[in-house]
Structures are given as C-alpha cells and as structure tokens.
Image (cartoon, rainbow, N blue to C red):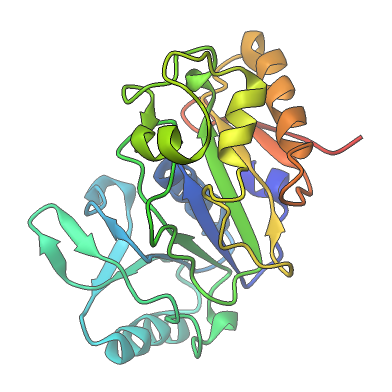
Length: 256
C-alpha cells in the first residue's frame, strides 16, 4: 500500500511537485484512502479532466466559496460514501481545468476528508523538471511535500528531451547539455534550493517519491538515488519512497 509507505497522518494536506507521475500517484493514493472515507484532490495549477472510468467526482466553480460549500456538503451529507472528490475552477480550455487559489484550504473543514491531496505544478509528462518563476504554487498550510521523479531519467543525457524546462537548468544550475544524469545529478536537480522544493517551509515534512521502479532489477538504482536525495544538503528528508504506480509496488528508505 502506497499510503502505508508514506504514512501521512489523517486529515492532513499534501502538496505534490516534480515530474515522473505526480497525477498517477495522487490517484493511487486517492484510491487507497477512499477505502476508509472521502478524499479531496485539488490543483493549484491546471489539470486535464479526469477519466470518468476512475470514478472521481469532479466539482468545479469559479466561485471558490460556493465550491467549498459544495464539497463540504457532499462529505457531510454522505458520510458513508467513500467519495473521491476533485475540486477545480472552470475550464481554462476544452482540455484543461483551472486550479484553485493556494489559500483554498484556509477555512476548509478538514475533518470531513480523510486526506487532502494537491497537485502544485505540471511537468508535461517529463520525469525530471525545473520550475519556472512562480512555480510551484503550493497549497498553504500543508503538512507534507512530496517531490516526484521518474527513475527512467537516470543515465540519460541532460537536454530538452529529458528535462522539462531544461533551458532554466542550463542557465541557473551550472549543468551542461549532454552530461549524464547520474543519481548524484538527479538528486541535485530534484533537491536544488531553487528546484521544485524551493518554497518549502520548516514545518512541512518532505517525503520524495521515485516512480517507474517497475521491477526488482531496478531497486539498486532506486536505492542509490534515494541515498543521494537524503544527502542533498538543502532540505531535510524524512524518508524516500520508491516503486511503481503502474506496477503497484512501493518500498521506503530511511536515513542511516
């Protein structure tokens, strides 16, 4: 169970950043937590409309006060229904739903939801990304931050085909095109002080996730990357979870 590996406390808020499968991880956690009660998913960026086959209940409104009332009413009036709720604003385009403001949770009745999960940036399906100015947009008052990376970026050459917004990396991070993405380089990018964790605050627990570890043959590489992440020097990491959302496998590594 992914929820067991992360060990989030009930009724808490988690921000997800990075690349390599954030949305898939969020949906997996929603599936697991919804076995015990209603779960709320939001985004402070923008998302594609969920596939109806996933059984998610999407409630959208540009009136955020009304939106809060609607999702709280559903959870309060249907306490025995384990809803997987998605709250957004209306369509930005035919294929994109607009996110809610970062203070959306400020007066939300958290005890109505087993978990609150927020997608705080986008990565255009890349496994490694560099945030632009203004990213990520973290939901306020979160207890956890989960930076996500895909293992398949390892040992690839740095470049725009592998890193989302590579030009920013080339300009600011002193890394050159063509350099191999070793575990040390991947950890340096993921946990850079100006990377996806840059808006972290000290009360927030960081639990990175390495996705696309599809079988035991890849576990050593994942553990090597996890150790580099835990030694990053910029942000405290409680533990690293690695595995594959697609294959349904997850383990965790703690600092030695």
